[in-house]
Image (cartoon, rainbow, N blue to C red; front, side, top):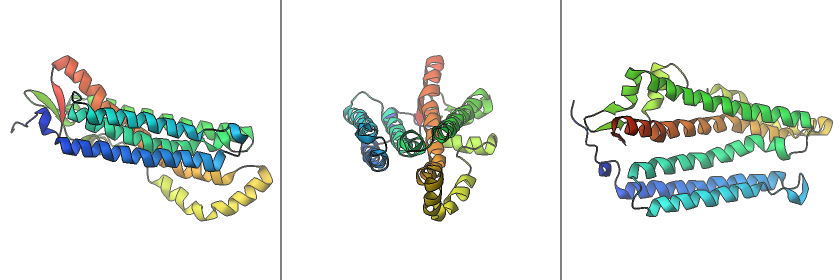
Length: 255
């Protein structure tokens, strides 16, 4: 087997890494502002002037931009850390946009508390289940030597990780899902044309904001997808590489 060059400067050029950080920052601005705008437009009048839930998106935007700015100008942070970290931050911003849409209707919309509780249990519970499911996928790979070698190929001076290879291993070797089943969209999307009609019927008879519930339902698969990707990326890029570094002294390089 030909030896793979594992110099830390061989991962990506500085311009490539800087571009990824800038792209992540631009994506964060769009996603956090969209999420904050949605909260402000849909729920600001539901419980009066005290509902400042939209500020959560602004605070998160400020924090993530500060982190990205630090990584952009840092001279000591490794290129792979900058690249992977900015990617996770971008995934987090998209996750906020859709997870906010999933849970906010059951916190701020006017509807009976029973429906609020049920919606929160379904939205939060499903996301927690998918996060644990996604984490278990990575744990199963690492716990099997042959699959672990496919994820992190050991060379004489480092481990080599091929970006995104975990999806192939999970789907081809473990026969499990890396992304939520597309049947969720197949079921939900055709309901969109009827959402406005059902909203008028349901809200007038039962006091339930069906339109907000529909937004929550259509956002759920995307929320699951991005939250699952976040935990997978954290484990693959940071957690297990740190364990390999501590146990073998070899770093993990990404190609």
